[in-house]
Length: 337
Image (cartoon, rainbow, N blue to C red; front, side, top):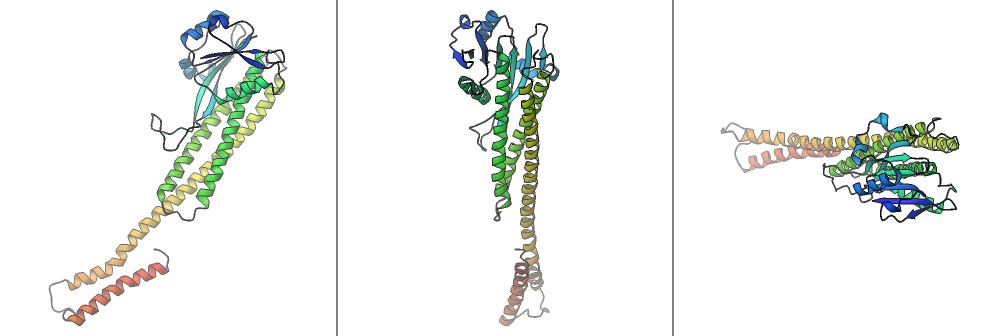
């Protein structure tokens, strides 16, 4: 899929209709490729003489080659975007057997002087949000300069990460209430389910941290003197860097909260298991004295006291009941059962 945009007179972005390579004219400022076919990639090569990486190569690219400016002055950036699965359910599993709250994918940016090319494997919320703002031109930027589009997309990525962290924070507050205020923990399976949910949130936090650190590296690269060849973007880059720093700290706080809830839930599970084992260990101790007496009177001998007669039978039965009920009352008094 290939989408293209041009800047209007008031500086906003508008979609351009692309039916073939002949529609890719020089006035287009942003060409967005979403899982493009070979034919669509060839349109870009023919129109702008710009080679594009493959989606597979984006996943295999080394960290040292993720941001650079080539000999022709073209800026190449590969960065991670986090997308949350809106249709996620705890019971659903992927092919590898694990549920996914969020996934990370690499997006390539190729910045010319007059054009920005983006390459990604699927649609992303951050891109959709940026396009909506750019159509309205909320920030009153001149998108005729593709560098502002690049910075706008990075800001949209940061906003999406902030939204994901806010959602996780909201979920953790709910989980805290469930774990700490649940005084009727009778089913260990419920606590096991809570551990699964917390582990999945921790996995999402780890991916968010990866994207934030990657974004911080991108902004550090862009802040270098020779990266963008202009200082008019420095204030925006510094502001984004400060926002990244605050989100990294927030992510670390949420990590600690998840670890606390995991430890607490694990402790409750251990307590439930200990109570179950204790109940099973109490039962043999209650049955041991009656079984001992019954086994003694089951011996084939006539010298035992109370071995004969109806009265003797009632006395022995009373002793058996007393040895059973006595420990039962004691354990109830100690609240062990």
